Image (tube, rainbow, N blue to C red):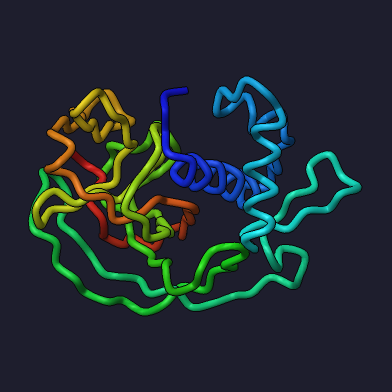
Length: 213
């Protein structure tokens, strides 16, 4: 690893553990070590224990995969997440907000106010199982890791793509060989959020976020 500020590394450790927990795959301390390339397992443990002290994680000392999000052992909490309307498919075009009701979502460790839902129109993400008409539930966040599926904004235009970085350039990758990816300077791309769930409503025929190039 390069010389990353401790606070930044700890934030990334938390996001890694959080995403694994939300996916139902709690990591071991050694898996955290491997993911970040720490030379000693104790370094990973120190980051995790500091997150426990800060109240961002809870530790069960009797389990190998004993870290969990606060309140994760409680009953699921369902909230209504706003569906933020439709965006033209095809090439990037201006975002048009058109609220279209609410979607019940089990928020688990996510913050309810940080979630929104969009409907996908376009076929550029079929390679990762996101089809036209699918609903994507998005957690608002301004950054992303390589491989995350994100909703990205380019000026006033939005798209759903896989996020990749190449030096000072950002690739918004299409997951369908029939569509071109979008490669831009990092400063030209704003991350609106990360896709955390995909839902399919058969026969709904909805139109929404442009997954096309």
